[in-house]
Image 1 (spheres, rainbow, N blue to C red):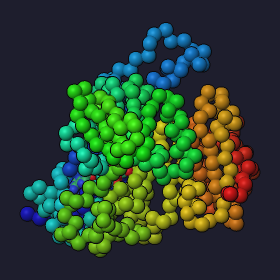
Image 2: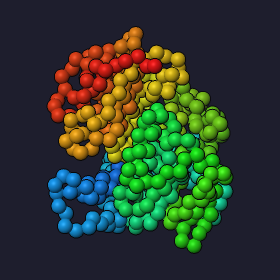
Image 3: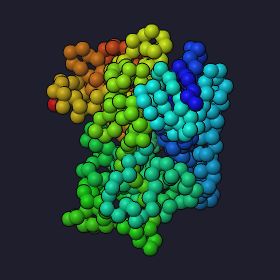
Image 4: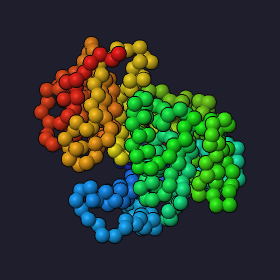
Length: 459
Ligand SMILES: Cc1cc2nc3c(=O)[nH]c(=O)nc-3n(C[C@H](O)[C@H](O)[C@H](O)COP(=O)(O)OP(=O)(O)OC[C@H]3O[C@@H](n4cnc5c(N)ncnc54)[C@H](O)[C@@H]3O)c2cc1C
């Protein structure tokens, strides 16, 4: 028998639950479908657990450095991985239970467990239930890309999902992929006490960032004992009696690196191949991302796509912003669009990288003129006082409008301080507003006006 709804939301990622609740509160009979765990990637095996694990890793790091601060710890620092995992599980449980309760207690909203698949533009099958609705909102997210590299099926490997089950210390963790996810795990496991080697196919880490950001991050992580193998052009995996070996290069020595465990962190793919999109007539691009317009409408009227699966963002905040855009347009009679938002994100190594707007590379590629200012964190009093002076701050400004084009803040609190620049960008204010602002001493943010005082033409 067909069940009739006004709206069906597929997936409980970072957009789906908020949207389903808003739809139900607006009096629309709504169903939300989830095939795995309520809360999706961020809550179960993305942001929430990684940042929780990073907090444990940082505690171990600070404890080992205690004597630098005149604090004596009269015992070796040990990391109890089972306790670390238990703490992470409790934090994740707190989030998933909260979302489950929220959905369950919303009148007019039904949560359905199972895999949703379109049968037509207006019907979705979940097991033996058929759901019919006027509006569908797809929030199916993505999963780790497991590339078809030689030897892949002969070795055990982790992705960001199953590494969440680890409750022991890997002796030597090999990580294929030197970008955001790989580097967060690299520093985390190094601080837990593992040997860590990162294998990256490109000539530098996190290729999307400016060269000096990549170089500084490599230096920071190397100082903690993480080994890197860049330009690993022909990666092949092989089992060994005590672990895994990776053939990293066809010509450069050493050609092979061995370790006890392997994490693949080479990118993400959207969960769209098994959604029956062809039956609904929803178009995707060559990589499987659902094609959407500025208001996140797909090629089929009445079907929207939100979150990572639409290829317009790959973060929790972009997915949540997708919810806000769709809710504003569908429920509030507003006209919001994706291009209103400014790209922003952080890399949560320690110290973190906070990013907003364009990189220098993007500015140059666009042929734009810019003013640039940089400041090493050694000049920031707060960083000095904390004994954490790694990194630098960089800001780029349009010389004509005086508006901020972009910022890369690699240093303590960089993920927080970047919002001072981001909000000025949203306000469309010239940089001189912050240049003349009085900030609190002693903070990292107090140096943003000083940083802006050093702007020079980009060579
Ligand atoms: C290790 C890691 C760390 C990260 N850290 C950060 C961070 O610090 N900050 C940040 O902003 N972002 C981070 N991200 C990215 C962030 O997790 C995602 O961008 C975010 O979860 C948004 O995802 P989403 O809303 O598109 O869907 P997801 O969270 O991926 O959820 C989609 C849901 O849909 C379900 N689903 C899929 N197909 C179907 C179907 N056919 N039927 C029913 N249900 C289905 C899935 O089971 C899943 O629960 C991280 C990601 C990873 C992997």
